[in-house]
Image (cartoon, rainbow, N blue to C red; front, side, top):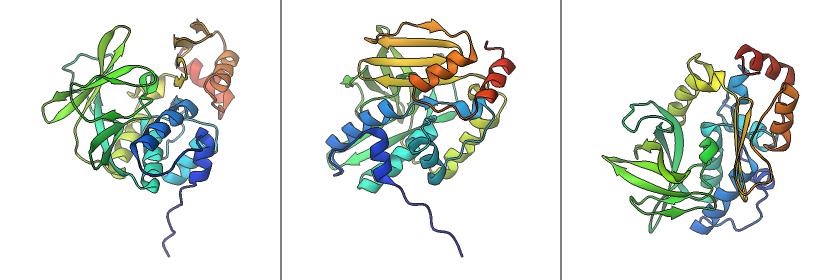
Length: 274
């Protein structure tokens, strides 16, 4: 007999992100959830960096991101967010993007990023709670050329053939995050790309330690042993000199319960990051 799919524990999710507001599938609810989620659940790649599997089924996502004091990368973050939105009655479509951050504008990159389209009677919006150091903290109207303020940066969407490019005003200039189309993607599509990102020696998630989290007045970003800060936060950027410092920063600043500190030390040594 086939087992029933695990149910979404939406009450635990709301507790995890500190949300006690309205639950009707309105734009106001979407905006509130889109802020609360990344403030509470950090972006991080500890599992692939520690050569642990990354599972995308709902049971694993809840165990890790909701109950386990962990974060995750785009597939984990946006699949969980999609499950929550659908449970509340939103019309949600999974999309895929080609990342262009820190790459030439004309680079041809694979579709390694996940984002969401949410449809309302008066138009569509884009949501994305999983793009690392520039994770959106508000949804964006799916309308090219419109400057869109969020609680953090200003964003815009530009038309790009049959799709769009997402840009952020970062460091005083517009920079492209990724380009995406509107073709619906499914769990099987994300599973294939997720396997590559979590297992291929060529994946930067396997050989770099990454964590990111927005706070109300700025952002924190960890790349290997370097902690960067943005906005009006009290901390200063600094280099971390030991496994103990890195574990402390992951735990205190990013709110991550490191699953295996000894393995973290070995991984940092393996990649010559300390």
